[in-house]
Length: 135
Image (tube, one colour):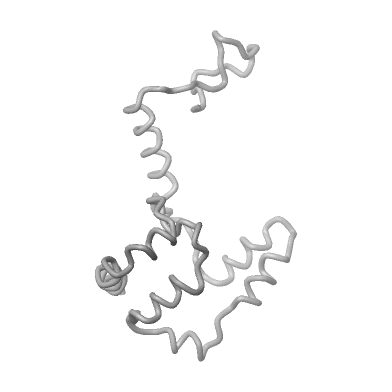
């Protein structure tokens, strides 16, 4: 379902004036999904990413719990320095087999952790190289 841009809120919602439209053609569905993801991942030039802006956002609705949780989960300076550098295969393997839930899907492709575990021997080198290539 997509929002009907021609919907007139001054008139009663009906078959002639629907609030939403149902699309069933694959090419139109693909088009709508692509546009939705492009909007989600588009560059936001006016986005402030400094620490003060982050806290302002976390507390924007008057609830301080998100910023409290953020502070509790903050990585120590020592740990932050220890994490610098390229990933090692044992780190990836340990996370995949001991830290991640098997039924979860860590990416948008839908492949679950259990699927990755089954094919890990075939995927580990290319995964390591791909992740370290981003560093």
